[in-house]
Image (tube, rainbow, N blue to C red):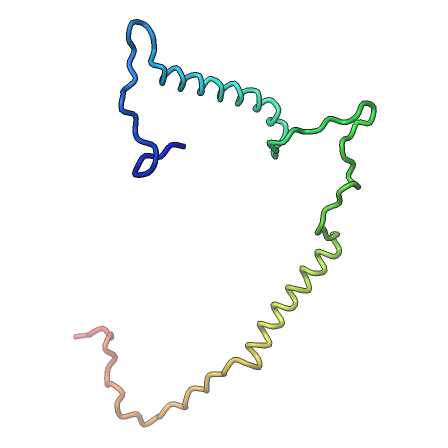
Length: 136
């Protein structure tokens, strides 16, 4: 990628033009680049359409008569858990999370004190509710 600015590539000083039926060399070079990329994309599309993942490295071909390049036991996954192990760890983690949560609520978190009892002789109570409807 060309970037314009100080200490980078300078912008082109001449504009590409078409003169006497011939194109400018810059335009020819651009279109040849585009055609080459299109041809590469068309050839790559046919091989990568069947695979949802890929590599830029060459894919090896199996030796004649074998039918497989690498069998599944040659390179087992480095970190792989069976279903019972994975679900055992998963449920143990959930039990730990929930029990820790309720342990914190029950034994570590402060409890709010109860509300004080109401004073039946509260003299500051209003005679009439402020939002009551006036019946006059």
